[in-house]
Image 1 (cartoon, rainbow, N blue to C red):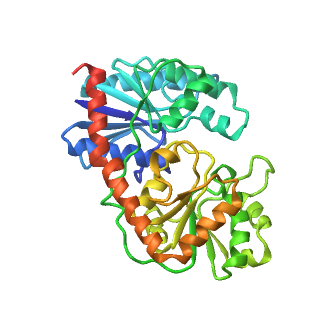
Image 2 (tube, helix red, strand yellow; image 1 turned 45 degrees about the horizontal axis):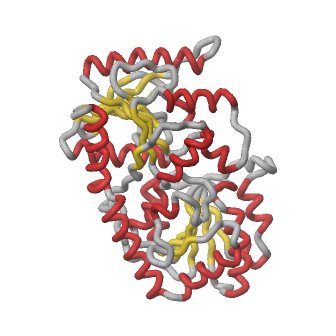
Image 3 (tube, rainbow, N blue to C red; image 1 turned 90 degrees about the vertical axis):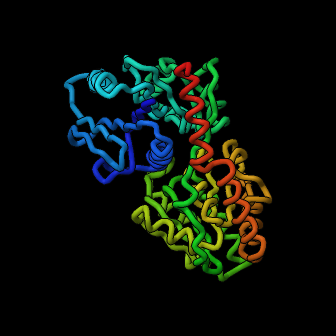
Length: 378
């Protein structure tokens, strides 16, 4: 069986920046390869076309090409022709593509294609109550309609996506996977340190965390808050989100808050390891890799309680869950974690145990293989 992943991003030095989507694909691709399955990765919109072999996984880079009109249509048709050549030459059995901006729309491919939901533009616009470009909505809907099979990283994401696109088709939920051996507990915990890591953006609940921290600093003046991630322009105010967060902090809280720009991926583990508590109060996720990474490293977690979170976390066991808007409750949970080392240590151990039992690549890869075989009628 030969599985190929069509994706706009992948964590390789030659393919540009990659986020959670690329990481989730890399994790499952490597796990499939380790099971003896042939795996390829197809990445359009690249600086040049080339084929790279990375430890047995073929990476097909397809160069970006500009057309004078309707580039979004003609480029996809050109990419489809190239992929069909790959299908014939390398005997690809299934193509898997993400839902984001409808990457496989207009592509008539000569093998089954399955689309996996990791959060489309329409999905996030719906959750954020923001308007979406009509072109993006159309491409994403067509992407889903033309798929042979449909997967979702969480049942919640599937439920919202069906509502947004008014779809009656069913999705198979297979959660994102993490290599638990790559995210091991390191025992470097510092005291009084709360870490948020990820993009600094409104939908991730960073403004709510600032409000909760204002309350916490009155109760625990020694507490520290670190924001680790890239700044963005806030869609409501058109200002820097870091500036917006800073403006919401009290004078006391501001003195205890640090903003750190993006760091190389391998350095993120160091910040995770040193943090006393990880706080990720997001309003909008599909099935975040950042959460799985923190859980795998046995970190105490305070997260949001929305939809997908209830499929990953167990409140009071792997950490605490709270709606981002409930600032007083968030403060209470953060204080409990900071005050009680025994509690946070046990919750961290529970979190890693849950990851190993339910979300490790060893577990999830078997679900993927079963799904692919079923789609192929094997």
